[in-house]
Length: 133
Image (tube, rainbow, N blue to C red):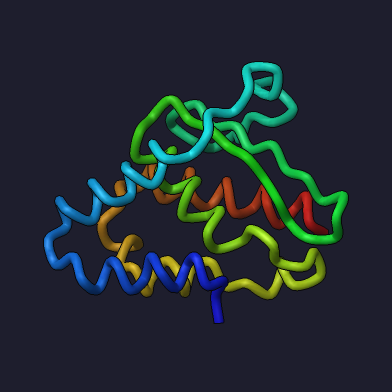
């Protein structure tokens, strides 16, 4: 079972039947996030494998995964917000157990993202798993 915030997104996606509305919803989720401070937009936090600029700044000091992120692409920023809903607060040993592919499949995003966006999403997930190991 995913985090409650992710389950809320799943429920909202079920309500929104049109993909244009779903994309708008994801973008709005990203717009609602606080921007990542410029001091954290450094090579160490940049995610390779993304077509757009993506930064993830994790904090694992409390034993759970917490992170902030940002992107120069609106849809990718929204995907970061969805990842936050999926992973934020998950105990570090359990991060590896989250089947992000299956969870995103519940949203139908696997079939509606370009190949480049899908590769970028996988790269972001890999980074979160890496910092949690």
